[in-house]
Length: 183
Picture 1: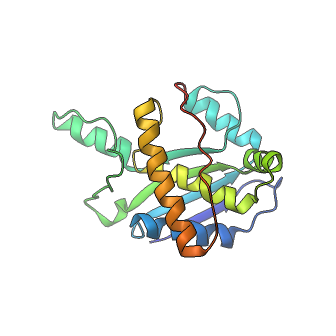
Picture 2 (picture 1 turned 30 degrees about the vertical axis):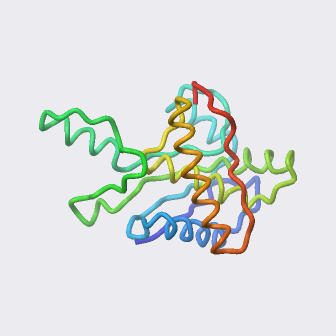
């Protein structure tokens, strides 16, 4: 199984091979190598449009995640009369069929991330790795709508970034901001 990286923007020069390698390292850390994962790099206009459609926020953002299993599991459990509210944070999906070995898709607002990097003098590719880790956490059911969820997700991101840094020799830091109720 693999990672598909699509670059649909032309604003920021991007090294897809490096991003794919970094995403594969993140998948290894989380033990999700058997799952396919899509990473789509877009500009501010596209990420703002997607953010507006799915989150009703008419502004660009750094990352949006669309889990493959969340809707599938909810529909499946509702059809047999069980209540189920999405993925449980940190629980790897257990698909019944090989063609369900897919975590979902992450849309990276590359232009948005680049502007954040310019403000903080951070390397773009390192920042994209951190933002992708955040997106993968969402694909695994982590949320940050409450302080408790935020704390749980930050703990997971810290673990991922620490392991990534240990394995690659790079020193990355999570980019998470304080909890915001509307996120």
